[in-house]
Amino acid sequence: MEPFEILDPRFRRYTIPIVFLEKLHSGMRWSEGPVWFADHRCLIWSDLPSDRMLRWDEFTGAVTTFRSPSNFSNGNTRDRQGRLVTCEHRGRRVTRTELNGEITVLADSYQGKRLNSPNDVVVRSDGTIWFTDPTYGISAEYEGGKAESEIGTCNVYCLNPLDGSLRVVADDFSRPNGLAFSPDEKRLYIADSGLWPDPQGPHHIRCFDVSDEGTLRNGRVFAEVSPGIPDGFRVDVEENIWTSAGDGVQCFTMGGDLIGKIPVPEKVANVCFGGPARDRLFICGHTSLYAIYINTRGIQVP
Image 1: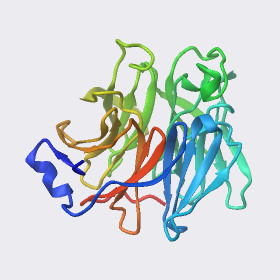
Image 2 (image 1 turned 180 degrees about the vertical axis):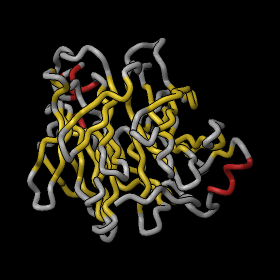
Image 3 (image 1 turned 180 degrees about the horizontal axis):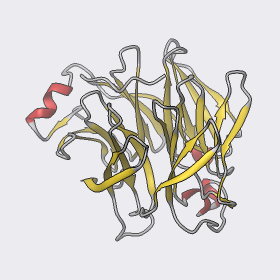
Image 4 (image 1 turned 90 degrees about the vertical axis):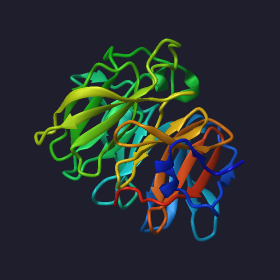
């Protein structure tokens, strides 16, 4: 299998002819939420149905258990102090792992009602934490624990960790999923993966303009993703979107043009950039962790 599928000549500049897709680890039930720790030269990600988080060491290639049980963790990121921020399905909450290993609950309810099952999370440069809250984690025991939604909608939230205030920034999604800011943070991209479970549901990424006050406006469909759904995705320094899909990783320009793909032999759930130069794309496939070098860099994160 060729490592890249070039659909538009513009994609060629991001490919490297001599690289290949590497399988780093296998044996997961549904891998999710990769986050790169540059200071430790390691990747941490979730094996959601197995109720554990794993750690891959870049120096040795060894994979060890980072946390088990993990409260059926899903999406992960780091805040501006380098602390791990995690979405927990079973806990129906967003948590932060402090530098001493203690876990702090950042959000578990909105207006007195329990969250559904926080899914993916990003941190803005001002320290605010933005996360999606679909119902995947409460739709079956397999992903967390079957329960009814107390809120009744699947929202996107913004949390201010300084005062604990939580506000809804978008409430018109079927199943909000992955999300990422543009390099200048003037735009926020959010996936709607409502095709799971509704065959007529959305399978696209929407784009919103972000005001100076942190509100979203001018929402529009940025790109349809097929086959499969857009689950998690990341943005590079040129504002190309590298998104999960049913056939691997798809690359869209900031104008919404699909220009190329990285074929992966299984469904892809999420991706992140890592490595010393942030030019290595780590890919969480259904059961396996993959990586490939590309000729661009991800946005700088802690």
